[in-house]
Image 1 (cartoon, rainbow, N blue to C red):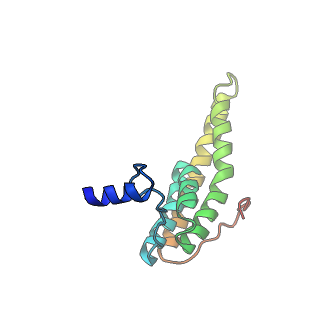
Image 2 (cartoon, one colour):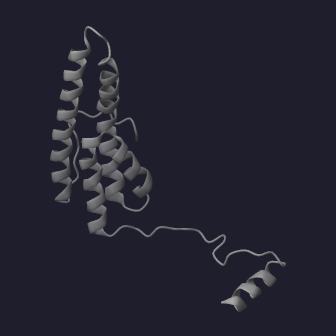
Image 3 (cartoon, rainbow, N blue to C red):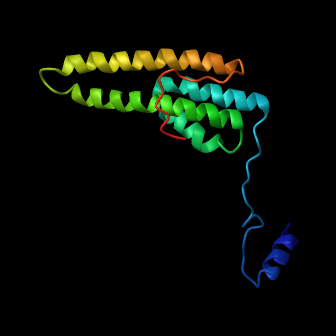
Length: 139
């Protein structure tokens, strides 16, 4: 190992660098079962809002076509209700109408949870899912 390091250092003009410097970190493509698993988790993540589907989309979109398609669909669906729920939760602090916004935020979360779980079950069977009401902002 020390010999390899010396050779590597000598080949680099005396500069000391790691053996792994400059090696690209290319991730392997997902297997079919992993692709389906991450696509399912993107939909189930809707229970927590749009953040899980956004992370799965950004991390796995280039590694599996089914995950890319389904995480984008889940992100497009969960983004507007998440924004609406955050706004409603902020308006909870308004003195007179705060209780109304608390109920609205709860109803948004319940609806998002129901639709996300139903879509996750559908995708876990290996079938693509399209939400009936989806703005599809991300193409």
